[in-house]
Image (tube, rainbow, N blue to C red; front, side):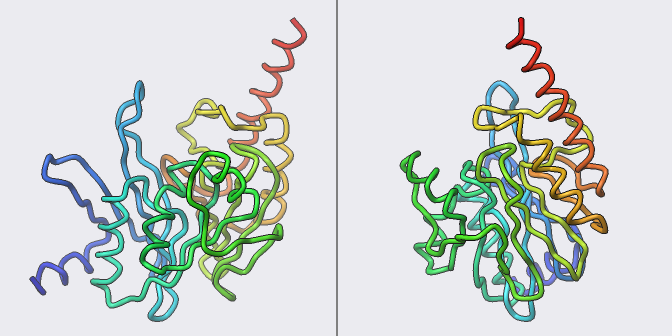
Length: 247
Protein backbone atom coordinates (compact mmCIF):
# COMPACT_ATOMS: atom_id res chain seq x y z
CA UNK A 1 0.00 0.00 0.00
CA UNK A 2 2.82 2.42 0.85
CA UNK A 3 4.20 2.04 -2.69
CA UNK A 4 0.81 2.97 -4.17
CA UNK A 5 0.65 6.10 -2.01
CA UNK A 6 4.20 7.07 -2.99
CA UNK A 7 3.29 6.68 -6.65
CA UNK A 8 0.21 8.89 -6.21
CA UNK A 9 2.29 11.62 -4.58
CA UNK A 10 4.85 11.71 -7.39
CA UNK A 11 2.69 12.06 -10.51
CA UNK A 12 1.53 15.57 -11.50
CA UNK A 13 -2.00 14.58 -12.53
CA UNK A 14 -4.12 11.99 -10.75
CA UNK A 15 -7.58 10.66 -11.63
CA UNK A 16 -9.71 8.86 -9.05
CA UNK A 17 -12.69 6.78 -10.20
CA UNK A 18 -15.52 4.93 -8.53
CA UNK A 19 -16.36 1.28 -9.11
CA UNK A 20 -18.47 2.11 -12.15
CA UNK A 21 -15.52 3.89 -13.77
CA UNK A 22 -17.08 7.36 -13.58
CA UNK A 23 -14.52 10.07 -12.89
CA UNK A 24 -14.97 11.52 -9.41
CA UNK A 25 -11.85 13.60 -8.87
CA UNK A 26 -8.80 14.77 -10.80
CA UNK A 27 -5.79 16.58 -9.33
CA UNK A 28 -3.38 18.78 -11.28
CA UNK A 29 -0.22 20.32 -9.86
CA UNK A 30 -0.09 24.08 -10.58
CA UNK A 31 2.97 24.80 -8.42
CA UNK A 32 4.92 23.18 -5.59
CA UNK A 33 2.28 24.33 -3.11
CA UNK A 34 -0.92 24.51 -5.16
CA UNK A 35 -3.03 21.77 -6.71
CA UNK A 36 -6.19 22.13 -8.77
CA UNK A 37 -8.93 19.67 -7.84
CA UNK A 38 -11.52 18.90 -10.52
CA UNK A 39 -14.68 17.04 -9.53
CA UNK A 40 -17.39 15.80 -11.84
CA UNK A 41 -21.15 15.65 -11.84
CA UNK A 42 -23.68 14.73 -14.49
CA UNK A 43 -25.91 17.73 -15.19
CA UNK A 44 -28.61 17.33 -17.81
CA UNK A 45 -28.82 18.27 -20.63
CA UNK A 46 -25.06 19.02 -20.67
CA UNK A 47 -23.77 15.67 -19.43
CA UNK A 48 -20.68 15.20 -17.25
CA UNK A 49 -19.34 18.58 -16.08
CA UNK A 50 -16.07 19.27 -14.27
CA UNK A 51 -15.81 21.89 -11.50
CA UNK A 52 -12.51 23.24 -10.18
CA UNK A 53 -11.17 24.22 -6.79
CA UNK A 54 -7.72 24.42 -5.23
CA UNK A 55 -5.67 22.83 -2.47
CA UNK A 56 -3.12 25.26 -1.02
CA UNK A 57 -0.26 23.80 1.02
CA UNK A 58 1.31 25.95 3.73
CA UNK A 59 3.98 24.04 5.63
CA UNK A 60 2.33 20.96 7.11
CA UNK A 61 -1.18 22.33 6.59
CA UNK A 62 -3.54 22.15 3.64
CA UNK A 63 -6.40 24.52 2.84
CA UNK A 64 -9.24 24.00 0.36
CA UNK A 65 -10.64 26.64 -1.93
CA UNK A 66 -14.11 25.37 -2.80
CA UNK A 67 -15.21 21.85 -1.99
CA UNK A 68 -15.45 19.17 -4.67
CA UNK A 69 -18.87 18.85 -6.28
CA UNK A 70 -19.65 15.43 -4.75
CA UNK A 71 -19.15 13.96 -1.30
CA UNK A 72 -17.28 11.04 -2.85
CA UNK A 73 -14.92 13.53 -4.50
CA UNK A 74 -14.39 15.38 -1.22
CA UNK A 75 -13.61 12.16 0.62
CA UNK A 76 -11.08 11.23 -2.06
CA UNK A 77 -9.48 14.67 -1.78
CA UNK A 78 -9.24 14.36 2.00
CA UNK A 79 -7.61 10.92 1.65
CA UNK A 80 -5.09 12.33 -0.84
CA UNK A 81 -4.22 15.26 1.43
CA UNK A 82 -3.78 13.01 4.46
CA UNK A 83 -1.64 10.59 2.41
CA UNK A 84 0.77 13.49 1.90
CA UNK A 85 1.10 13.79 5.68
CA UNK A 86 -0.77 17.10 5.77
CA UNK A 87 -3.40 18.39 8.18
CA UNK A 88 -6.51 19.89 6.60
CA UNK A 89 -6.80 23.21 8.37
CA UNK A 90 -9.64 25.04 6.63
CA UNK A 91 -11.73 25.62 3.53
CA UNK A 92 -13.22 28.72 1.94
CA UNK A 93 -16.12 28.64 -0.53
CA UNK A 94 -16.44 31.22 -3.29
CA UNK A 95 -20.25 31.26 -3.67
CA UNK A 96 -23.37 29.43 -2.57
CA UNK A 97 -23.80 27.06 -5.54
CA UNK A 98 -23.31 23.35 -4.92
CA UNK A 99 -20.18 23.12 -7.12
CA UNK A 100 -18.40 25.43 -4.66
CA UNK A 101 -20.00 24.90 -1.25
CA UNK A 102 -21.72 21.52 -1.51
CA UNK A 103 -19.64 19.73 1.10
CA UNK A 104 -19.64 22.34 3.86
CA UNK A 105 -21.68 19.87 5.99
CA UNK A 106 -19.06 17.12 5.66
CA UNK A 107 -16.19 19.47 6.54
CA UNK A 108 -18.15 20.89 9.48
CA UNK A 109 -18.76 17.34 10.76
CA UNK A 110 -15.02 16.67 10.52
CA UNK A 111 -14.32 19.84 12.57
CA UNK A 112 -12.48 21.44 9.66
CA UNK A 113 -12.96 25.22 9.70
CA UNK A 114 -15.14 26.42 6.84
CA UNK A 115 -15.31 30.03 5.69
CA UNK A 116 -17.97 31.81 3.65
CA UNK A 117 -19.02 35.43 3.36
CA UNK A 118 -22.06 36.75 5.22
CA UNK A 119 -23.88 37.00 1.89
CA UNK A 120 -23.01 33.43 0.93
CA UNK A 121 -24.29 32.15 4.27
CA UNK A 122 -27.48 34.16 3.82
CA UNK A 123 -28.04 32.56 0.41
CA UNK A 124 -27.22 29.10 1.76
CA UNK A 125 -29.84 29.58 4.48
CA UNK A 126 -32.41 30.74 1.92
CA UNK A 127 -31.77 27.51 0.03
CA UNK A 128 -32.03 25.37 3.19
CA UNK A 129 -28.32 24.55 3.11
CA UNK A 130 -25.86 24.32 5.98
CA UNK A 131 -23.74 27.43 6.56
CA UNK A 132 -20.01 27.71 7.24
CA UNK A 133 -18.53 27.44 10.72
CA UNK A 134 -16.80 30.83 10.31
CA UNK A 135 -18.04 33.92 8.51
CA UNK A 136 -16.28 36.60 6.44
CA UNK A 137 -17.94 39.95 7.06
CA UNK A 138 -15.72 42.26 4.97
CA UNK A 139 -14.90 42.63 1.26
CA UNK A 140 -11.28 41.59 1.86
CA UNK A 141 -10.03 38.83 4.13
CA UNK A 142 -6.69 37.11 4.80
CA UNK A 143 -7.73 33.48 4.48
CA UNK A 144 -4.16 32.24 5.04
CA UNK A 145 -1.86 34.98 6.37
CA UNK A 146 0.53 36.06 3.63
CA UNK A 147 -0.49 33.11 1.45
CA UNK A 148 -4.13 33.54 0.36
CA UNK A 149 -6.53 36.47 0.47
CA UNK A 150 -10.20 36.80 -0.41
CA UNK A 151 -11.74 39.67 -2.37
CA UNK A 152 -15.40 40.43 -3.04
CA UNK A 153 -15.58 42.45 -6.28
CA UNK A 154 -19.35 42.75 -6.48
CA UNK A 155 -22.07 40.71 -8.14
CA UNK A 156 -21.54 38.65 -11.28
CA UNK A 157 -22.17 34.92 -11.67
CA UNK A 158 -23.97 35.24 -8.35
CA UNK A 159 -24.55 38.11 -5.94
CA UNK A 160 -22.02 36.63 -3.50
CA UNK A 161 -19.11 35.45 -5.71
CA UNK A 162 -15.60 36.06 -4.39
CA UNK A 163 -12.11 35.45 -5.81
CA UNK A 164 -9.03 34.14 -3.99
CA UNK A 165 -5.52 35.50 -4.63
CA UNK A 166 -2.29 33.61 -3.91
CA UNK A 167 0.37 36.37 -3.99
CA UNK A 168 3.43 34.12 -3.66
CA UNK A 169 2.30 31.95 -6.56
CA UNK A 170 0.65 34.75 -8.57
CA UNK A 171 -2.38 32.46 -8.94
CA UNK A 172 -5.92 33.87 -9.00
CA UNK A 173 -8.81 31.53 -8.33
CA UNK A 174 -11.78 33.12 -10.04
CA UNK A 175 -14.29 30.33 -9.53
CA UNK A 176 -17.50 30.56 -11.53
CA UNK A 177 -17.12 34.35 -11.68
CA UNK A 178 -14.49 33.70 -14.40
CA UNK A 179 -15.11 31.80 -17.64
CA UNK A 180 -12.59 29.75 -19.61
CA UNK A 181 -11.55 30.82 -23.10
CA UNK A 182 -13.62 27.98 -24.56
CA UNK A 183 -16.79 29.48 -23.13
CA UNK A 184 -18.73 31.37 -25.79
CA UNK A 185 -21.36 32.58 -23.31
CA UNK A 186 -21.79 33.04 -19.57
CA UNK A 187 -23.31 29.60 -19.06
CA UNK A 188 -25.85 29.30 -16.26
CA UNK A 189 -27.12 32.77 -15.31
CA UNK A 190 -30.13 31.89 -13.17
CA UNK A 191 -28.61 33.66 -10.16
CA UNK A 192 -26.43 36.13 -12.07
CA UNK A 193 -26.35 39.92 -12.05
CA UNK A 194 -25.34 40.41 -15.67
CA UNK A 195 -25.51 44.20 -15.63
CA UNK A 196 -23.03 44.38 -12.72
CA UNK A 197 -20.73 41.59 -13.88
CA UNK A 198 -18.57 43.76 -16.22
CA UNK A 199 -18.01 46.38 -13.49
CA UNK A 200 -17.19 43.74 -10.90
CA UNK A 201 -14.75 42.10 -13.31
CA UNK A 202 -13.02 45.42 -13.94
CA UNK A 203 -12.23 45.62 -10.22
CA UNK A 204 -10.53 42.22 -10.44
CA UNK A 205 -8.64 43.22 -13.60
CA UNK A 206 -7.37 46.36 -11.86
CA UNK A 207 -6.48 44.56 -8.65
CA UNK A 208 -4.55 41.58 -10.07
CA UNK A 209 -2.74 42.70 -13.25
CA UNK A 210 0.27 40.47 -12.52
CA UNK A 211 -1.61 37.18 -12.16
CA UNK A 212 0.31 34.42 -13.94
CA UNK A 213 -2.41 31.78 -13.70
CA UNK A 214 -6.16 32.32 -13.54
CA UNK A 215 -8.32 29.36 -12.55
CA UNK A 216 -11.97 29.43 -13.68
CA UNK A 217 -14.71 27.42 -12.01
CA UNK A 218 -15.10 25.26 -15.10
CA UNK A 219 -12.67 24.63 -17.95
CA UNK A 220 -8.98 25.14 -18.57
CA UNK A 221 -6.63 27.27 -16.49
CA UNK A 222 -5.37 30.37 -18.31
CA UNK A 223 -3.88 33.80 -17.68
CA UNK A 224 -5.31 37.30 -17.21
CA UNK A 225 -6.87 37.07 -20.68
CA UNK A 226 -9.65 35.02 -19.04
CA UNK A 227 -10.69 38.12 -17.11
CA UNK A 228 -11.06 40.28 -20.23
CA UNK A 229 -12.75 37.37 -22.02
CA UNK A 230 -15.32 37.02 -19.24
CA UNK A 231 -15.90 40.76 -19.17
CA UNK A 232 -16.54 40.76 -22.93
CA UNK A 233 -19.06 37.92 -22.55
CA UNK A 234 -20.82 39.82 -19.78
CA UNK A 235 -20.92 43.05 -21.79
CA UNK A 236 -22.38 41.18 -24.76
CA UNK A 237 -25.01 39.51 -22.58
CA UNK A 238 -25.91 42.82 -20.91
CA UNK A 239 -26.30 44.50 -24.31
CA UNK A 240 -28.54 41.66 -25.52
CA UNK A 241 -30.71 41.98 -22.42
CA UNK A 242 -31.09 45.73 -22.99
CA UNK A 243 -32.13 45.12 -26.59
CA UNK A 244 -34.69 42.51 -25.54
CA UNK A 245 -36.11 44.83 -22.87
CA UNK A 246 -36.29 47.70 -25.36
CA UNK A 247 -38.08 45.54 -27.92
